[in-house]
Amino acid sequence: MQRPSNNELSYGHPDPLPSPKVLHAGSLSLVYQHGFIRYIRMGDLEVLRMINHLVRDKNWNTITQVIENEVIDDRGDSFSIKYDCRVRQHQVDFLWECQIEGTADCRLEFSIRGRALSAFKRNRIGFTVLHPNRECQGQPVTIWHSDDSSEDSVFPRLISPHQPFMDIKAMQWYVGGNCAKLSFSGEVFETEDQRNWTDDSFKTYCTPLAIPFPQQLEVGDTVEQKIQLNITQDSSPAIRDASQYSFEVLPQKYQLPLIGVGRSSEVDQLTADQEQLLTAVNFDHYQVDLKLFDHTWETQFENAVAEALRLNTVLELSLFFKQVEPEIAVFLEIAARHQ
Image (cartoon, rainbow, N blue to C red; front, side):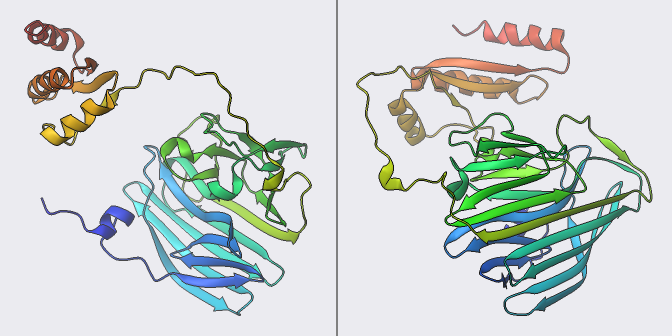
């Protein structure tokens, strides 16, 4: 097989993305590229990492988007962008009409109106916003809910396994001496901690995961959403200067949990250098996935046993079946050869 190109690996198609364009909305700077806005900054501080929109089908596949009829009006300290966006693959056929406005008073407005050209099931459709980890983690934030109630919260400093913010109509936080308020309409949004998936951001998205999915769209169904970002000069008393913090190292020692290492599914056998490194780390166990319906599983198992012995660690197996009884019988017969 021919190795996919870098563009295919990054964007899902061989053609490069259009060149990014730097735009300004007053003292806000941002990058526009292929229908999305990225790296929204006030000076050196990042306010938002990205605002985009997407269609995800019933299998959570993000469908490739084609930008059409794009018009960019760059006025120096303000701008407007209009374009159509066709989303078409397999059963999915959807058309967005999109508009982005940036004004000289540091305001951004991104509106989308979409229409289903085919009937299909979707898990998510509409806006996604990424918040930068560096500027947000540990910072106070006020959340407005769909019933217009509000609550004060904090962007998690430690990785949150659950959504830190739910039922979002608007959110307000501080970036340096600037107050950022983000308002949503057309859907209910919630925020998840993307650091769970090794991304350096928080993600605010729709539709809430508590709503059953997939949802059916019929021909002619419409989706309309709008996001507004307003920046004002306002120093928050909740943000303390770093010089006010003090740290104390406690004398207690704590036992770390037992940590193992998982065997890669892309490597046939470990090299001697790899085994030496893994042995030096002294992991508690060596975890291996075995798909007993795969004709190569016996070879993988033999390699895993031999590697665990050389690593001088415990072998932990996760077994996957299609037909449990016959496949487990064969596994037990082969496993009995090893101690």
